[in-house]
Image 1: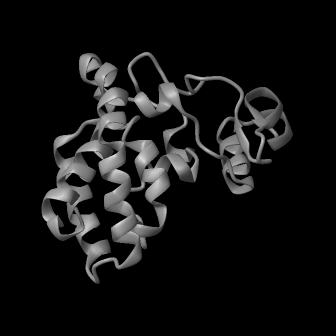
Image 2: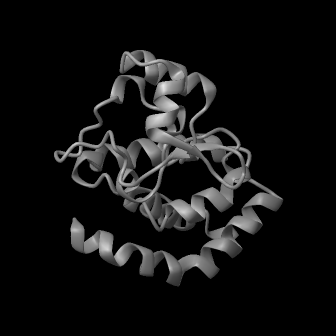
Length: 166
């Protein structure tokens, strides 16, 4: 797995122009059943993919934390929300709450998340490949293909199943 993860950013960069053109066509006139297709592709991929074998997202990128996430996680950790934010979060350039450090401080050496039951919404939904109105998040999807092998494979399968957009 680690060999594939090392090559993933380069593979994603090589495919970026092709993928960007594909998503721009898709965004202009998405197929009526795109969300259904994405649910199928997502389900098929994650029947084969074990995120615990990878956890690259937790090592290399952090989620945005909503106020609800902060309250839920602080409660899980038996902390006050302010204590949680002071210990783990910072404001980024866009004014969003993000982790102070990477890899995620809640990622265990076994790739298990220590706050899994209360993890942020962004983590619950990652890599966002089964999100409604999928055609609207092409920039996020392009970014995620360099981080998540499953997202990369889902995009490749999308292009195969939607050749009219290539």
